Length: 285
Image 1 (cartoon, rainbow, N blue to C red):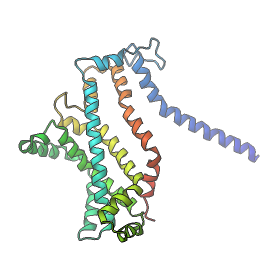
Image 2: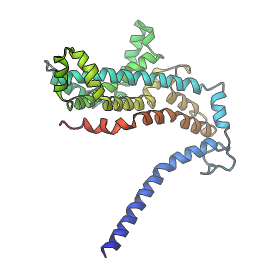
Image 3: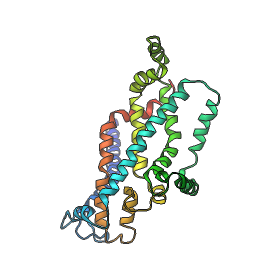
Image 4: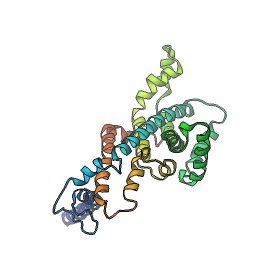
């Protein structure tokens, strides 16, 4: 009797797992099929294309109207700079909150937490006016510049990332820094040569999280960027199908698959550090 119940329970568990896997994989397979479908029409698409073609990929890179290569380069530039600066600034701020005791420390931590309660989209009018005013003084940081977009992304990412990294730094024993100081190291040298190598998992985690959020962000980029040569990939892809969705569905699907490659590369490089970086800093040991 026990064996019969065990087999039945195992069957249903495996059936549910297979259903969830199929439910997750089906949209990706549908996009892959669309990128090779010669009909270029959603209503006529099938999961297995009857006449597969690479014309959508060719048109994506050779079209004079759309600058897919430029959009992708812009996105990678903005994303890599944003992710790198986020890691550097969050590490410095988190280390100060974790190791030093100073007036306003608790208020600063609570302030960072409260700021994260309000998404950037609520302040998009204020952000637009701020960038517009800043551009009249510093043209290189005004509207239609990647510098302004990077600054806006940094402002929205610092609170959560500083909190996450601060929790991880709390788990690193202070005795390691004290030993380095006894050997003659300055506090900054101890931070660079002792703390950062031990904090590599959380650094990789913050980089990946910042990379994902910046690379796929659309609304703020659409508000701040005006010309096609400055568009990031999400803005360009939205423009691609804004007026003729049914006629460019195959090209859009091809662009979506190509734009996924940076995600895969980043995850493959950082996969060993992601799990420990997300879980170790969640509780204080």
